[in-house]
Length: 352
Image (cartoon, rainbow, N blue to C red; front, top):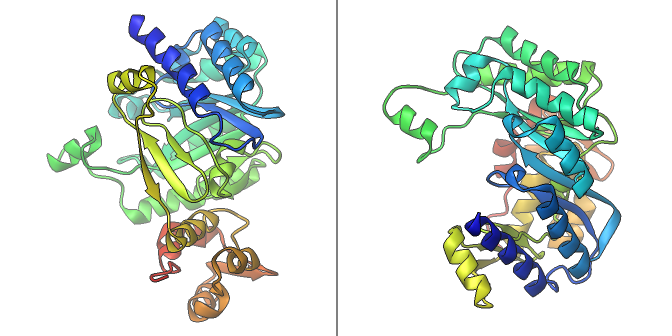
Protein backbone atom coordinates (compact mmCIF):
# COMPACT_ATOMS: atom_id res chain seq x y z
CA UNK A 1 0.00 0.00 0.00
CA UNK A 2 2.84 2.39 0.85
CA UNK A 3 4.49 1.88 -2.53
CA UNK A 4 1.15 2.31 -4.28
CA UNK A 5 0.61 5.64 -2.51
CA UNK A 6 4.15 6.74 -3.41
CA UNK A 7 3.49 5.95 -7.06
CA UNK A 8 0.19 7.84 -7.09
CA UNK A 9 1.84 10.85 -5.43
CA UNK A 10 4.57 10.66 -8.10
CA UNK A 11 1.99 10.69 -10.87
CA UNK A 12 0.47 13.85 -9.41
CA UNK A 13 3.89 15.46 -9.23
CA UNK A 14 4.73 14.58 -12.83
CA UNK A 15 1.39 15.97 -14.02
CA UNK A 16 2.29 19.28 -12.40
CA UNK A 17 5.92 19.31 -13.57
CA UNK A 18 4.97 18.65 -17.19
CA UNK A 19 1.90 20.87 -17.48
CA UNK A 20 3.43 22.82 -20.38
CA UNK A 21 4.18 19.75 -22.54
CA UNK A 22 0.90 19.83 -24.49
CA UNK A 23 1.13 23.62 -24.95
CA UNK A 24 -2.44 24.22 -23.80
CA UNK A 25 -3.92 21.90 -26.43
CA UNK A 26 -7.24 20.42 -25.39
CA UNK A 27 -7.02 16.94 -23.89
CA UNK A 28 -9.52 14.83 -25.82
CA UNK A 29 -8.64 11.41 -24.40
CA UNK A 30 -7.35 10.14 -21.06
CA UNK A 31 -6.19 6.53 -20.84
CA UNK A 32 -5.41 4.50 -17.72
CA UNK A 33 -3.36 1.62 -19.09
CA UNK A 34 -0.27 -0.50 -18.57
CA UNK A 35 -0.03 -3.02 -15.75
CA UNK A 36 -3.29 -3.30 -13.86
CA UNK A 37 -4.82 0.19 -13.45
CA UNK A 38 -8.08 -1.45 -12.36
CA UNK A 39 -6.37 -2.05 -9.00
CA UNK A 40 -6.76 1.67 -8.36
CA UNK A 41 -9.68 2.59 -6.12
CA UNK A 42 -12.36 4.94 -7.35
CA UNK A 43 -11.21 7.80 -5.12
CA UNK A 44 -7.63 7.38 -6.38
CA UNK A 45 -8.78 7.59 -10.00
CA UNK A 46 -10.92 10.64 -9.23
CA UNK A 47 -7.96 12.32 -7.55
CA UNK A 48 -5.81 11.73 -10.61
CA UNK A 49 -8.53 13.05 -12.92
CA UNK A 50 -8.90 16.12 -10.72
CA UNK A 51 -5.15 16.68 -11.06
CA UNK A 52 -5.37 16.43 -14.84
CA UNK A 53 -8.20 18.97 -14.93
CA UNK A 54 -6.22 21.27 -12.65
CA UNK A 55 -3.12 21.34 -14.88
CA UNK A 56 -4.52 20.77 -18.38
CA UNK A 57 -7.39 21.90 -20.60
CA UNK A 58 -9.71 18.89 -20.76
CA UNK A 59 -12.50 18.68 -23.34
CA UNK A 60 -16.04 18.32 -22.00
CA UNK A 61 -16.38 15.33 -24.38
CA UNK A 62 -13.13 13.66 -23.34
CA UNK A 63 -12.97 9.88 -23.72
CA UNK A 64 -11.70 8.48 -20.39
CA UNK A 65 -10.70 4.82 -20.70
CA UNK A 66 -9.45 2.31 -18.17
CA UNK A 67 -7.86 -1.04 -19.06
CA UNK A 68 -9.03 -3.96 -16.95
CA UNK A 69 -8.82 -7.72 -16.73
CA UNK A 70 -12.19 -9.50 -16.55
CA UNK A 71 -11.50 -10.91 -13.10
CA UNK A 72 -10.96 -7.38 -11.73
CA UNK A 73 -14.44 -6.18 -12.69
CA UNK A 74 -17.28 -6.85 -10.28
CA UNK A 75 -20.59 -5.04 -10.39
CA UNK A 76 -19.53 -2.85 -7.46
CA UNK A 77 -16.17 -2.11 -9.08
CA UNK A 78 -17.66 -0.94 -12.36
CA UNK A 79 -20.10 1.36 -10.53
CA UNK A 80 -17.15 2.76 -8.59
CA UNK A 81 -15.23 3.41 -11.82
CA UNK A 82 -18.22 5.16 -13.38
CA UNK A 83 -18.61 7.43 -10.35
CA UNK A 84 -14.90 8.25 -10.51
CA UNK A 85 -15.24 9.52 -14.08
CA UNK A 86 -14.39 6.52 -16.28
CA UNK A 87 -16.68 6.49 -19.34
CA UNK A 88 -15.02 3.74 -21.39
CA UNK A 89 -13.59 0.32 -20.52
CA UNK A 90 -11.03 -1.76 -22.38
CA UNK A 91 -11.38 -5.37 -21.23
CA UNK A 92 -8.66 -7.90 -22.06
CA UNK A 93 -10.77 -10.95 -22.82
CA UNK A 94 -8.47 -12.48 -25.50
CA UNK A 95 -10.64 -15.56 -26.10
CA UNK A 96 -13.94 -17.20 -25.20
CA UNK A 97 -12.32 -20.66 -25.17
CA UNK A 98 -11.14 -21.99 -21.81
CA UNK A 99 -8.30 -23.91 -23.49
CA UNK A 100 -6.93 -20.70 -25.02
CA UNK A 101 -7.08 -18.79 -21.74
CA UNK A 102 -5.23 -21.58 -19.95
CA UNK A 103 -2.64 -21.78 -22.75
CA UNK A 104 -2.06 -18.01 -22.55
CA UNK A 105 -1.78 -18.14 -18.73
CA UNK A 106 -4.73 -15.81 -18.33
CA UNK A 107 -6.10 -15.60 -14.79
CA UNK A 108 -9.76 -15.26 -15.78
CA UNK A 109 -12.32 -17.75 -17.06
CA UNK A 110 -14.82 -17.50 -19.90
CA UNK A 111 -17.67 -16.98 -17.44
CA UNK A 112 -15.74 -14.11 -15.80
CA UNK A 113 -15.16 -12.55 -19.22
CA UNK A 114 -18.85 -12.70 -20.00
CA UNK A 115 -19.82 -11.39 -16.57
CA UNK A 116 -17.35 -8.46 -16.65
CA UNK A 117 -18.92 -7.00 -19.79
CA UNK A 118 -22.50 -7.45 -18.56
CA UNK A 119 -21.64 -5.99 -15.14
CA UNK A 120 -20.15 -2.91 -16.77
CA UNK A 121 -23.18 -2.50 -19.01
CA UNK A 122 -25.55 -2.91 -16.06
CA UNK A 123 -23.57 -0.26 -14.17
CA UNK A 124 -24.12 2.20 -17.01
CA UNK A 125 -20.88 1.96 -19.00
CA UNK A 126 -22.01 1.35 -22.57
CA UNK A 127 -18.77 2.28 -24.35
CA UNK A 128 -16.79 -0.94 -24.01
CA UNK A 129 -14.03 -2.42 -26.13
CA UNK A 130 -12.72 -5.95 -25.78
CA UNK A 131 -9.48 -7.51 -27.03
CA UNK A 132 -9.42 -10.79 -28.95
CA UNK A 133 -6.48 -12.84 -30.26
CA UNK A 134 -6.41 -14.86 -33.49
CA UNK A 135 -3.68 -17.03 -34.94
CA UNK A 136 -3.58 -19.13 -31.77
CA UNK A 137 -1.95 -22.52 -32.48
CA UNK A 138 -4.54 -25.26 -32.79
CA UNK A 139 -7.54 -22.93 -33.01
CA UNK A 140 -9.83 -24.22 -35.81
CA UNK A 141 -11.49 -21.63 -38.02
CA UNK A 142 -14.95 -22.56 -36.72
CA UNK A 143 -13.81 -21.87 -33.15
CA UNK A 144 -12.55 -18.45 -34.22
CA UNK A 145 -15.97 -17.75 -35.73
CA UNK A 146 -17.60 -18.81 -32.46
CA UNK A 147 -15.28 -16.46 -30.59
CA UNK A 148 -16.44 -13.57 -32.74
CA UNK A 149 -20.12 -14.45 -32.40
CA UNK A 150 -19.71 -14.60 -28.62
CA UNK A 151 -18.32 -11.07 -28.77
CA UNK A 152 -21.21 -9.88 -30.96
CA UNK A 153 -23.74 -11.41 -28.54
CA UNK A 154 -22.38 -9.16 -25.76
CA UNK A 155 -23.36 -6.06 -27.78
CA UNK A 156 -20.01 -4.31 -27.24
CA UNK A 157 -19.34 -1.21 -29.33
CA UNK A 158 -15.70 -1.86 -30.16
CA UNK A 159 -13.45 -4.88 -30.72
CA UNK A 160 -9.68 -4.91 -31.13
CA UNK A 161 -8.38 -8.15 -32.62
CA UNK A 162 -4.68 -8.93 -32.87
CA UNK A 163 -2.74 -11.77 -34.45
CA UNK A 164 -0.67 -13.72 -31.93
CA UNK A 165 2.99 -12.83 -32.22
CA UNK A 166 5.87 -14.63 -30.55
CA UNK A 167 8.40 -12.12 -29.26
CA UNK A 168 11.82 -12.96 -27.80
CA UNK A 169 12.17 -12.75 -24.02
CA UNK A 170 8.47 -13.41 -23.43
CA UNK A 171 6.74 -16.52 -22.10
CA UNK A 172 5.72 -17.42 -25.67
CA UNK A 173 9.26 -16.74 -26.90
CA UNK A 174 10.77 -19.10 -24.33
CA UNK A 175 8.22 -21.80 -25.18
CA UNK A 176 9.02 -21.42 -28.86
CA UNK A 177 12.77 -21.73 -28.24
CA UNK A 178 12.17 -24.94 -26.32
CA UNK A 179 10.03 -26.33 -29.16
CA UNK A 180 6.95 -26.34 -26.94
CA UNK A 181 4.87 -24.19 -29.29
CA UNK A 182 4.78 -22.46 -32.63
CA UNK A 183 2.52 -19.75 -33.98
CA UNK A 184 -0.15 -20.57 -36.52
CA UNK A 185 1.23 -20.36 -40.05
CA UNK A 186 0.67 -17.20 -42.08
CA UNK A 187 -1.89 -18.87 -44.34
CA UNK A 188 -4.10 -19.97 -41.44
CA UNK A 189 -3.77 -16.60 -39.68
CA UNK A 190 -4.64 -14.91 -42.98
CA UNK A 191 -7.80 -17.00 -43.34
CA UNK A 192 -8.86 -16.06 -39.82
CA UNK A 193 -8.24 -12.38 -40.60
CA UNK A 194 -10.42 -12.46 -43.73
CA UNK A 195 -13.19 -14.38 -41.96
CA UNK A 196 -13.02 -11.83 -39.16
CA UNK A 197 -13.42 -8.85 -41.49
CA UNK A 198 -16.39 -10.51 -43.20
CA UNK A 199 -18.19 -11.40 -39.97
CA UNK A 200 -17.48 -7.98 -38.47
CA UNK A 201 -19.06 -6.31 -41.49
CA UNK A 202 -22.11 -8.57 -41.29
CA UNK A 203 -22.49 -7.65 -37.60
CA UNK A 204 -22.42 -3.92 -38.39
CA UNK A 205 -18.83 -3.22 -37.36
CA UNK A 206 -16.64 -0.81 -39.29
CA UNK A 207 -12.99 -1.80 -39.75
CA UNK A 208 -11.41 1.60 -39.34
CA UNK A 209 -7.88 0.26 -38.77
CA UNK A 210 -6.24 -3.11 -39.40
CA UNK A 211 -6.94 -4.42 -35.89
CA UNK A 212 -9.79 -2.17 -34.77
CA UNK A 213 -13.50 -2.53 -35.42
CA UNK A 214 -16.40 -0.51 -34.07
CA UNK A 215 -20.07 0.26 -34.36
CA UNK A 216 -19.97 3.55 -36.35
CA UNK A 217 -19.59 6.46 -33.97
CA UNK A 218 -17.63 4.46 -31.39
CA UNK A 219 -14.14 4.74 -32.88
CA UNK A 220 -11.50 4.97 -30.17
CA UNK A 221 -10.39 8.59 -29.80
CA UNK A 222 -7.28 7.36 -28.01
CA UNK A 223 -6.12 4.97 -30.72
CA UNK A 224 -7.07 7.38 -33.49
CA UNK A 225 -4.94 10.14 -31.97
CA UNK A 226 -1.84 7.96 -32.44
CA UNK A 227 -2.61 7.25 -36.08
CA UNK A 228 -3.30 10.91 -36.76
CA UNK A 229 0.04 11.95 -35.30
CA UNK A 230 -1.50 14.03 -32.51
CA UNK A 231 0.64 15.05 -29.54
CA UNK A 232 0.25 13.03 -26.37
CA UNK A 233 1.63 12.98 -22.84
CA UNK A 234 2.38 9.76 -20.99
CA UNK A 235 2.75 9.88 -17.20
CA UNK A 236 4.24 7.16 -14.99
CA UNK A 237 6.90 4.42 -15.30
CA UNK A 238 7.55 3.35 -18.94
CA UNK A 239 5.06 5.95 -20.24
CA UNK A 240 5.76 7.39 -23.71
CA UNK A 241 5.12 10.95 -24.92
CA UNK A 242 5.17 12.62 -28.36
CA UNK A 243 5.28 16.32 -29.21
CA UNK A 244 5.36 16.14 -33.01
CA UNK A 245 9.14 16.18 -33.45
CA UNK A 246 10.44 14.03 -30.60
CA UNK A 247 9.47 10.97 -28.61
CA UNK A 248 10.38 10.40 -24.99
CA UNK A 249 9.84 7.60 -22.51
CA UNK A 250 10.10 7.36 -18.75
CA UNK A 251 12.31 4.93 -16.89
CA UNK A 252 10.57 1.58 -16.37
CA UNK A 253 11.60 0.99 -12.76
CA UNK A 254 8.96 2.12 -10.24
CA UNK A 255 11.49 2.88 -7.47
CA UNK A 256 13.76 4.82 -9.85
CA UNK A 257 10.77 6.73 -11.20
CA UNK A 258 9.41 7.77 -7.80
CA UNK A 259 12.89 8.64 -6.50
CA UNK A 260 13.61 11.00 -9.39
CA UNK A 261 10.15 12.58 -9.41
CA UNK A 262 10.34 13.31 -5.67
CA UNK A 263 13.74 14.91 -6.33
CA UNK A 264 12.12 17.18 -8.92
CA UNK A 265 13.74 15.42 -11.90
CA UNK A 266 12.07 13.91 -14.95
CA UNK A 267 13.44 10.37 -15.48
CA UNK A 268 13.14 10.02 -19.25
CA UNK A 269 15.08 9.45 -22.45
CA UNK A 270 14.36 11.36 -25.64
CA UNK A 271 14.63 10.59 -29.35
CA UNK A 272 14.55 13.43 -31.87
CA UNK A 273 12.70 12.42 -35.04
CA UNK A 274 14.06 13.65 -38.35
CA UNK A 275 11.82 14.43 -41.31
CA UNK A 276 12.37 11.03 -42.94
CA UNK A 277 11.45 9.14 -39.76
CA UNK A 278 8.28 11.19 -39.32
CA UNK A 279 7.35 10.63 -42.97
CA UNK A 280 7.81 6.86 -42.64
CA UNK A 281 5.76 6.78 -39.45
CA UNK A 282 3.00 8.67 -41.28
CA UNK A 283 3.09 6.06 -44.05
CA UNK A 284 3.06 3.15 -41.60
CA UNK A 285 0.20 4.42 -39.45
CA UNK A 286 -2.01 5.84 -42.21
CA UNK A 287 -1.86 2.77 -44.43
CA UNK A 288 -3.26 0.78 -41.50
CA UNK A 289 -6.41 2.94 -41.50
CA UNK A 290 -9.38 3.07 -43.87
CA UNK A 291 -8.57 6.69 -44.73
CA UNK A 292 -5.11 5.78 -45.97
CA UNK A 293 -2.58 8.40 -47.04
CA UNK A 294 -3.66 11.90 -48.02
CA UNK A 295 -1.11 12.62 -50.74
CA UNK A 296 -1.67 16.38 -50.52
CA UNK A 297 -1.02 16.45 -46.78
CA UNK A 298 2.04 14.25 -47.30
CA UNK A 299 3.37 16.69 -49.89
CA UNK A 300 2.76 19.67 -47.60
CA UNK A 301 4.26 18.12 -44.47
CA UNK A 302 7.19 16.22 -45.94
CA UNK A 303 7.81 17.78 -49.35
CA UNK A 304 7.52 14.46 -51.19
CA UNK A 305 5.31 13.41 -54.09
CA UNK A 306 4.42 9.91 -52.97
CA UNK A 307 2.32 9.24 -56.10
CA UNK A 308 5.18 10.18 -58.40
CA UNK A 309 7.89 8.39 -56.43
CA UNK A 310 5.98 5.13 -56.08
CA UNK A 311 3.79 5.11 -59.19
CA UNK A 312 4.86 1.61 -60.28
CA UNK A 313 4.28 0.13 -56.82
CA UNK A 314 0.87 1.78 -56.57
CA UNK A 315 -0.21 0.49 -59.99
CA UNK A 316 0.95 -3.03 -59.13
CA UNK A 317 -1.01 -3.03 -55.85
CA UNK A 318 -4.10 -1.69 -57.62
CA UNK A 319 -3.89 -4.49 -60.20
CA UNK A 320 -3.53 -7.05 -57.39
CA UNK A 321 -6.64 -5.67 -55.68
CA UNK A 322 -4.71 -4.51 -52.61
CA UNK A 323 -4.87 -0.74 -53.04
CA UNK A 324 -7.40 1.88 -54.13
CA UNK A 325 -6.64 5.41 -55.28
CA UNK A 326 -9.57 7.75 -54.67
CA UNK A 327 -9.32 11.51 -54.96
CA UNK A 328 -6.32 12.66 -52.98
CA UNK A 329 -6.05 9.42 -51.00
CA UNK A 330 -4.43 6.04 -51.50
CA UNK A 331 -5.63 3.28 -49.19
CA UNK A 332 -5.51 -0.46 -48.83
CA UNK A 333 -8.35 -2.86 -49.56
CA UNK A 334 -9.43 -5.62 -47.16
CA UNK A 335 -6.85 -7.96 -48.69
CA UNK A 336 -4.24 -5.21 -48.66
CA UNK A 337 -4.82 -4.52 -44.95
CA UNK A 338 -3.84 -8.12 -44.24
CA UNK A 339 -0.33 -7.14 -45.44
CA UNK A 340 -0.39 -3.53 -44.27
CA UNK A 341 2.96 -3.45 -42.48
CA UNK A 342 4.75 -5.24 -45.31
CA UNK A 343 3.23 -2.98 -47.96
CA UNK A 344 3.99 0.15 -45.92
CA UNK A 345 7.67 -0.77 -45.73
CA UNK A 346 7.80 -0.74 -49.55
CA UNK A 347 6.82 2.96 -49.44
CA UNK A 348 9.39 4.02 -46.88
CA UNK A 349 11.58 7.00 -47.70
CA UNK A 350 15.17 5.74 -47.52
CA UNK A 351 16.97 9.08 -47.65
CA UNK A 352 16.27 12.67 -46.67
